[in-house]
Image 1 (cartoon, one colour):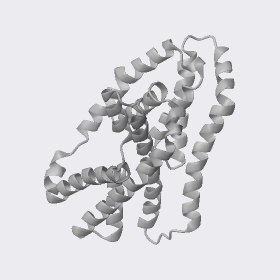
Image 2: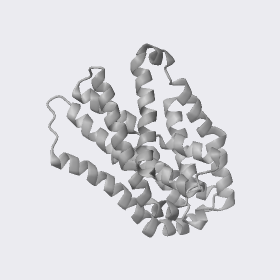
Image 3: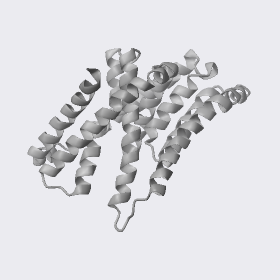
Image 4: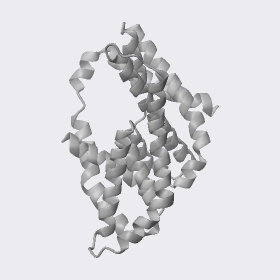
Length: 266
């Protein structure tokens, strides 16, 4: 069931990148997204650290709690903006860009914290640099794929004789990028989202019949499974047992995100 949920998350982000997001517009909003993301992550991280400290957690525990509050769910963000019809707006692109930057920063910090939490582990500049290098390599590799390999791949695909040739190749690209993102330390949904935006650049992969097939596969099966499985994994008993801590975390998480946005919005 967990595997099906992960596949659903992959299709949710791929579908958004493929059918809803204008890559050029998203890149054009990168400066605004970065300006919003950095204070938002910083405020949420500090708020989580302080609430963990107030409940007597250790230093590492406080850091992990701060990190948990600074992460933004790209899947929920995309789905909410799509349902509201605001994903194509300028501020929708900024919100989406901010969520992507939040997750990249958070996953980078997570890799560092995991290293720190290991017994007898030592955090070195080389280790941090290697993590950063892997993240950069993923996005540079994605750009090179879009520039040099996407069009030849489309030409090769057109030589195949079976009916679902484009859809089959697209599925291969989706899961390849998802795996590549995971190997480089990012979440696989970032890889799927990137694959969607790249494939949308090539007209041979953007035909209406392909969009219908992708929609049917994504929204007809995997995306509903993702949200259903996500709902079943919520442990309400644990929330009730958490009491003040759970309530404090929820309130601080909401307030931290709002405050972070207001700081730059003003």
